[in-house]
Amino acid sequence: MTSGKQKINKTPEVDSGYTSSIEIKVRDYECDLQGVVNNANYLHYLEHARHEFLESKGIGFAELHREGTDLIVTKVEIEYKFSLRSLDKFVVKTAVMREGNVRLAFYQDIYRLPDEKLIARAKVTGISSKNGRPVSPKPILKKLGLE
Image 1 (cartoon, rainbow, N blue to C red):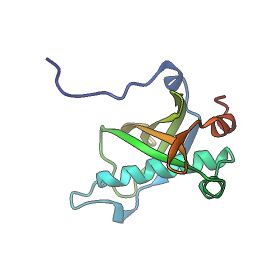
Image 2: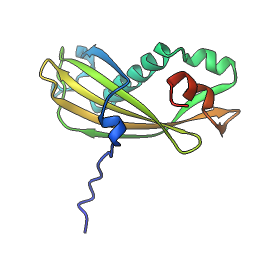
Image 3: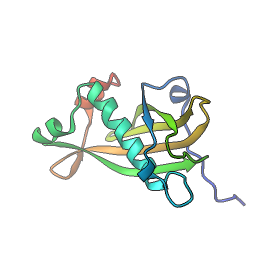
């Protein structure tokens, strides 16, 4: 019998290094009555880090959309380890890997600064889509150096 807990399994390639990191600071309004960051805000932190990473590789969402391609999140898994509090500084580290023919998996970890305590671990899976249908993300993979 299993405990029902599922871990986000990272591959050796992901564990060996991240491809991007960004520093962020918790704002007061992101905290709940207990004085900790509300769980939904971690999604914003992860998304901001993914967008900044993709833009650093020359991949802009508006330009992709004008070309008829959209990147769509299909699944998010988050393991919350510890809480961030108001004014905490932290870093979101990101690695991306191809998964199958049409999926990209972003492995993201949030570490509090300066002690680098692991706060949350996430896997965000997405697809490349044209006209609402999944398509090969080859052009995106090339820009990411994964093809």
